[in-house]
Image 1 (cartoon, rainbow, N blue to C red):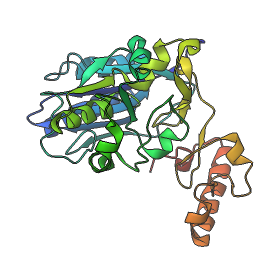
Image 2: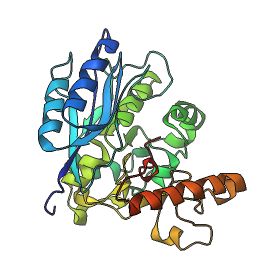
Image 3: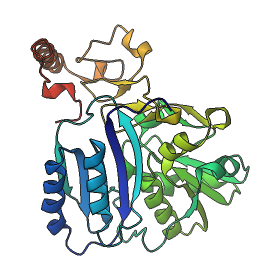
Image 4: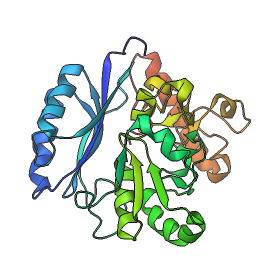
Length: 312
């Protein structure tokens, strides 16, 4: 990897039993703000999940504190770097689930699939007895996935249980192994717990997710195709966690390529080929005014809130 950019980014999660998550919210928020950290952390009875960015000292302080929480000594953390701050503000939110599956009784701290290290992942997914499933949303899969992976074409993770139940028999076709993956590991960890609850015995998932795979496995040995969408202003990353080529349409938040930007349907900050026919003329006029304000703020040397497509 090339020389790291100055902003340290930490994608983290841990399924753990928090008796009173509401008591943790102000502590975490105060610590993050004291160190100038920005991003989002979700807290629920089932644990913690988030992505934060800032200077190395601040990130290390927040991670160290989170590891002191009950059941979080082995907090899953993946680090990368960004040239500029990828978040607009710091949010610490209380949630019913740290990743929303919407199925009662699913507990990854009690039962979960078998973890597979990145260096062993290729052997598993090329096994003809393995069903490989991408548990991410459709717009994430569109810019990159593993060779041979099934795309459920779900709009949100909460759609996964229904999709699996409806397609279970056609997916298996005599195969006994189910392998799943996601960006950082949290969705595939919870989805393997769901499959175990559905009676599937041989369930596997990529430990550390795609990010750990791209960091660990050399590009020449990789089964990954394309780029990996990330939920911050970097938009996507490549092997070695280098910055990817994708940008976000500020109108619909969908990742777009250079080819998309050459489309007649593309107008910066206003529309892209994905959303052009899904937005009204009044919507586009509103987006155009926002884009105008972004340009004016840039001329004044300031950052408009619209620059960060996920700030709102």
